[in-house]
Amino acid sequence: MENYTLPTGKVLVLRSCEPDMTSHGGFKWPESGPVTCPDWKDNTECGNGLHGWLWAQGNFDLKFKSPQAKWLALEVDEKDIRELSGKVKFPACTVLVTGTFRLAYDFVMKYFWLKHAAELRLQVVQDPTAKYSDEEGVSVVTTEFKASASAAGDGGHASAAGKYGHASAAGYGGHASAAGDGGHASAAGDGGHASAAGYGGHASAAGYGGHASAAGYGGHAVVLGLNGRACCGENGALILTYWDGTRNRHVVGYAGENGIESGKWYKLSDKKELELIADAI
Image (cartoon, rainbow, N blue to C red; front, side, top):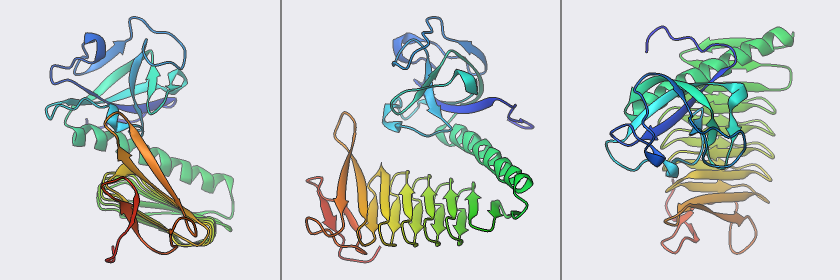
């Protein structure tokens, strides 16, 4: 969809449908244009609304499993969003894009990071100590105390080196690194890597096969996608995720307890227990 601009007060939502564009209850989605829920109820309970993942973030195990499933990018009034468990619901929307997962997902994430970059630029206006740069798809804001960096494209790399810095990489195979104390690193795409090296830093990898490392004291490493690996720092914790056939479940390990060592990489065994990885990542 060329020349699209995200209107003020709007957000984007990703969802899937059966190949014939139907969803639960037989509701038929159009391939483009406005959609209204016929039985909307303004509450935070599943049902009685249109559903999806706000900014393509949530429990993707709720998707339609057909290889030919259609994926939609929806424009929604932000004030209409109601948060549920792993998804959101809303009374109405406009279908902007219909096609493959990659097509719809990339569209949503493109505007998520454009929105984020605009927020970073606003920070520069509000903080006289802030400096903004945008090179090769990476937006960076540096202030007296912290740096924030985001990379939206596939294979993108974002690094924030200052104290309390934040780094995020949204594309497939992206890498995010936050080196300062209290930094946070997030890699949202499949196969992404997130690393937070400073004291109290946190690292999160949301995609399938992601790797998360929080090497500093008290760091937490979290992999919300399946088939992940994690490494935490001294007095830190790590969380890995598996699918039990009905829902995602998380296994938590604490450095110094039950044989979990800081600075070592772990995966889940066939028994869904934390297992030390002998070879380097």
